[in-house]
Amino acid sequence: MKAGIRSHQLILPSVVCSTHVSRRIAQEVGGVTFAHQHGCAIIGVDVAGIDNFFIDLASHPNVASVLVVALGCETIQGNELAEKIVTRNPATKYLVIQESAGVDDAVSKGVVAANSLASRFPEPRHAEDPIVVGISSQGNAGELVAFLQAEGLHTVESSEGFSALMSAKVHLIVSFTDSMQPPTGFPLIPVINIASDSELHLAFSQEFDLSHDASHQEIAAKISTVARGEQTKSEANSSGEIVAPRLVRSV
Image (cartoon, rainbow, N blue to C red; front, side, top):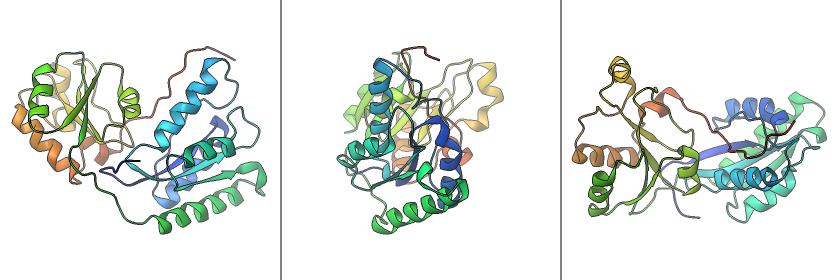
């Protein structure tokens, strides 16, 4: 597992039913979590798809440790998920809510487990060069990609959203936000939002990291400072969601 530019603790709910407990644990320990509608009542290719997505999240370079929070009766079993994750990220534990005396007891046990992980893996990790930069665009960032590669950075370009770039293990993302959409983020990965010259983006100018006329040199400089720890606007605002892709519609 390669080093990252952030050192997040991921509180990973393996099923929709454990998202509330996961959120309470994350609030107590300063971890990152997210709500989702997966882990149960999923069929076909989505079982492996969601499973692999969770493993990708937990083994991302910016994740220092992982606490898997399971309910106990879901399709994606928390202990089985944790066993797969630990082969990629040894700093992993799991908690089963149904093995606790109730919600408060589960939260208390989760906080103890998360703090134990943090004490065993306390040092933030910093990536050595080259940084892997994700470019979220509609395929029109060729000149920037060439410039960054000439500067010694590795790049991955995608028009399929932040989750695809997460799976590619990018350290940070440069996002050319759609002119009709506000800036957003991804909780585990710093996102540098670059505005267009649309009226919407001009109205939200303070929420963007760089303006539409930012030069390649300015973008590279921002990448450098963010990689060294400077928060992006989306990090400072805690904006953005983790969205797990699904292919099969089920009930």
